Amino acid sequence: MNRAKRKIEHIQHALATFDHGAHGFDDITFVHQSLPDVRIRDIQLHTALGELSLSSPFFINAMTGGGGEKTLEINKGLAEAAKHCRIAMAVGSQTSALKDDKQRKTFEIVRKVNKDGIIFANVGSEATVDDAKRAVDMIEADGLQIHLNVVQELVMPEGDRDFTGALLRIEQIVQNVQVPVIVKEVGFGMSKETAVRLQEAGVKIVDVGGFGGTNFARIENKRRSNVMAYFNDWGISTAASIVEVVQSSPSLTVIGSGGVRTALDAAKAIALGAAAVGMAGPLLRTLVEQGLEALIAFMEELHHDFTFIMGALGTKTIAELQRAPLVIRGDTHHWLTERGFDTKAYSCR
Image (cartoon, rainbow, N blue to C red; front, side, top):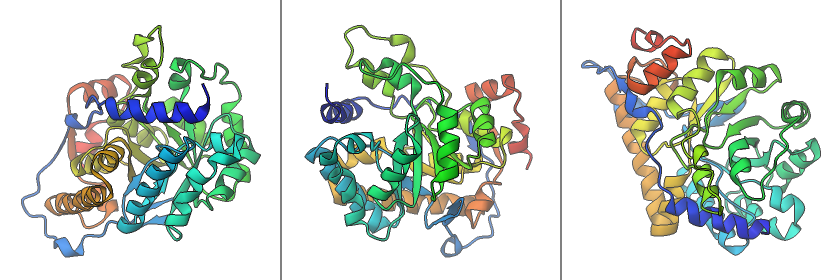
C-alpha cells in the first residue's frame, strides 16, 4: 500500500477509534484553595519550550500530511485555527514528502496559511541529519519533532522491523539542526530509562505521548488480518509518564500529550511538571465533523476554562501552576510507587 493511501486510512481509523480515558488524569486531584488571592485578568498563559516562547501552553500536535488533498485540507484548517488562536502547531510525519515531492504541498500549506506562527516539523527516528534539515526547510519550521513509534511500526503490516541506531541518529540531529528538537512518543508513553538516555544524548525537550489518547496499535490492528491484540493496551499512562520524566531527568522540558481532552486534563499535566500540552484527536474530530468555526470555538473555550482553573488554584503563571499541590491516587499512585517515584513531592509542596 502506498503512503498516501495509508495516511487516509490512519485518519479514518483515528476518527472511528475513541480514546479509552486511561491517561491517568482521573487519578489526579488538586488541593482546593479557598483564598486564591488572584484576579482572572492577571493570569498569564505564556510558557517556554527551550528557546521558544509560546503565548499558550496548548498546541496542535502532529496529526497528518502526505495523503493528498484530504490531508492538505485538514492541515489548512488546523493551521487556520492555530493562527486565529495564536497557538503552535506540529505537522504529521513528513517522510512521505521527503520521498515524493508531490506530497510537499500537504505540509507547505501550514506555513502559507500561518506565516508568522510557531510550527514544528516532524520526522521519524529513522531520519538522517539531511532528512531533518529538509523537513525543517520545507515548512520554515521553528522546531523539529522526532517521533518514536516502535509499537505502531510493529503492528503496522508494512512497518519497520529494524530499530537499531535510533539514539545515535537523534544525537546527530540535535547536534546539527539549528532549531529546537523535540523527541516525541506517539501514544505509548515515555519511561525514565528512555528519558535519561535522551538527556544524555543532548535532547532538551521531550513529549511523553502517553497511553490514553489516540491508540495507534488499535488503528494499525484495524488494518491487519491477524490482529496483534496484545499491543492494544500497551504503554505507560500520560500522567505516569510525565512524572517518570520530570523526576528522573529534571533538566528536560516536558510536553504532556496523550488523551488530553479538557482544560482540567491540561492543568493536571502542567501541575505534574509539563511546560505545555499537545492535543490531536479531539481537534481532528471537531474539525472534520463540525468545521473550522467549531474548532476555533473549542480552542477558545479550552483557554477560558484553563484560565478559570488557574484562578481557582491561585496561580497566575504556568510556573506557579507547576507548583500547585495535588494528590495522586489509584493506578497512577501504584505505578509510581512501584517504580520508586516520590508522590508526596506533589501533595506536600
